[in-house]
Length: 359
Length: 225
Image (cartoon, rainbow over the protein chains, first blue to last red):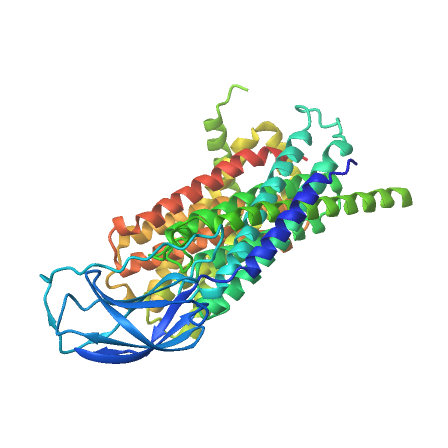
């Protein structure tokens, strides 16, 4: 058998690149909260909490309280406590534009960060005809080629995007490979017309059957990995290891379908029969996988991004920087799946040859 | 072969019906199975307070009855006789007639099951139900189960360990159908309009078509041994 080194090297490089950037890139800085809950006209002192920010490392921190994108009130920073905490003071007038307030902070390290604050507004007179003030203008920080967007709730777990999603792509890739081989088994294993006496050539069919079985087996491994990474992610974002979501239950159903495929394979002794029957079942299984994972979730409400009003991941990723890791991760894992398949196939061949020698 | 596919299917259906009529005890056994399952449900549930449980239970019993209805397709004792018959007919006619036959059988059983449900559990939770939708769902669900299970039964029967493998191979394959039909039934019981149940109806139709197309395409590889 020819050795293919190229794709293995590519796979290793891609996955190392993904591992380094996915784990070492810090999350983009963001403002988490302020201890200001209720505001009236007059002076307020408050503490602002940031995430991954560098309040103490920056040369200047400019902080504003913005009212409905029309009024801006500069805050005086009294004390920078540490990299993520600072105390500031702001004076508010009697008349404001609306009840919507947001903090905007700019410094030379973090760039500009926002916090839309659900403040309880009391004692102001609302006037929507107020003359708009000039908004503070900040210089845009130079964007690095890759950064993780800060998302509430998801937070650091966004790194899982690079592991969880490629698992499913790889599973689909392997299961489709398995389907193609199963179709070949059926086509090559066909007898000519009614001449039942003509035996099919086992050496023509067995390699395809081996490939179908091995790629489905490796696909099952990626299905398990996808379920596990998904379950961990669900624990930290949805608060539970397992929940009623069509994609979760669909994935488990796919796992059961393919488990049945292997039970079917193992329960048939006669080889020719085994090839044919398992190929037929595999075609059913693969089409069912598409129904369960691609069709059914579209018609059911669920928790995954892009469903039931949840934004899809492409919407978080405004500057497409997530893709610079996500695409290499997908390709890398598909190559890894193919690599695993390759090794398993060679092991199976050696085992079969070994058995032939014994007989 | 001068006989058209259509005629072949009709003749094979007639043959299935005759053999069924000759062995009336088979169908009676299925009805008794259904009756005792529902009686056990009645004794253990006592009453069903919500439509969701009602619909789910209807389909769970429907599923198990359908698996039992496959005994004929699994019976390898009559295989030599069938082999002779099938050398006379096209495989596509064989699978289509078998699918139609089992779909009809399961539909009849599910209608019986519906009557027994009404008898045991009453129709208190069904006040808002859209009967048209329920009957449509019952028929489409039965045909879907019939087609898929007929195919799985022919596959399992070839392994020589039919009854054991039937459940293992069949249950995963009917999951999508079952999810859809249970949801369709729940919405029908809640009395939503046809339009808001349209997705489920469309999915049911698609799953039915998918099952019959796959069975039609793959059966020729399966039957001749």
